[in-house]
Length: 179
Figure 1 (cartoon, rainbow, N blue to C red):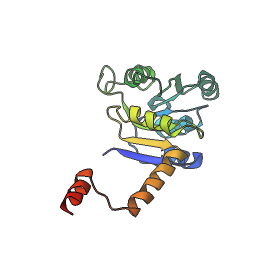
Figure 2 (cartoon, one colour; figure 1 turned 90 degrees about the horizontal axis):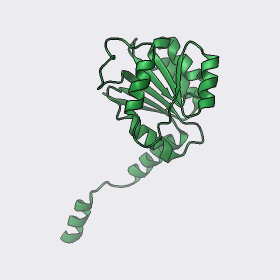
Figure 3 (cartoon, rainbow, N blue to C red; figure 1 turned 135 degrees about the horizontal axis):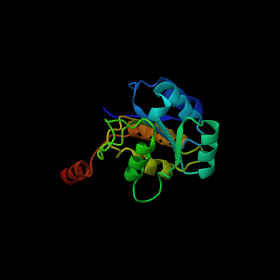
């Protein structure tokens, strides 16, 4: 079963990276890696060959490569039009951990978990677009999203949903016709 974990703060996001149950040897992608701190934390758990950090900022990726020279980082903007699957497939093959289970298999990018952090000021629409892109990745089992806006939306929608009776338009229309 696929899981979505929402985090509102960096501390919770990094705790998820340190504690969420994933199989050893799982390939992990961090989108919005900035200067690589969470990517480094993930690599401590899964090994540098199994973790790839990407960010839309070339300067951030350069800083991450300097700070953590043994890890894999690349420039990628998940909100660019055209989808990200083929670009992630190419980046996946560049990641050091490519083995027989992923090499040459165009239907599986090898990433079992993805951590997404577009920054504290990211608009909800950008986060939702990134989630929509990433959830299409084949084989993805876990998506961890750091977004206060998305967490707030989830809380608010649960509050609204619990305040009203749920009906479809057909149910409402049929009830109006019957009265």
